[in-house]
Length: 202
Image (tube, rainbow, N blue to C red):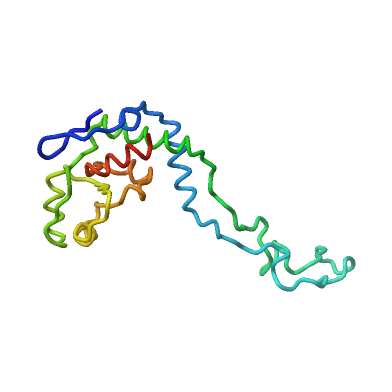
């Protein structure tokens, strides 16, 4: 299939399987969930009764004091005691096969294309590394909202000029992720990046 250029004439040839696949909502949800879960640190920990220092001696004898029996001062019901259900280090990552990942990315790209949220440009020429230069270029390729720009090679002028724009994200093809694609109102691809994506997920 052919993706038309958003500015000027011409088109870029891409694989139908990448930009014309059916939308699979369940798979996309699983893909996004797995990606977000993989970013969780899972380092939250608290001490249980065996981790808290002290409490090795029985505080008072079992019978005859009139008080409730106690075996340790580090019981969870005591002040300074351990937590009943203590947090421990855990791995939140979810297993996702490569075949499922590629199919999910194809589904997202195809849906963006169907909703006309995908914009293709021949190249990105920013004359200087200035925010106003990137903002002026951005006004011609999007209608506002969150914009994701995908390039085949990083550009110093684009990165330096666009880093102060709050609703702009710039990534290369290798850095592309499902959450950025789903969260963007418009995705701008260079022609070279579109071909690389087509080859990568075909």
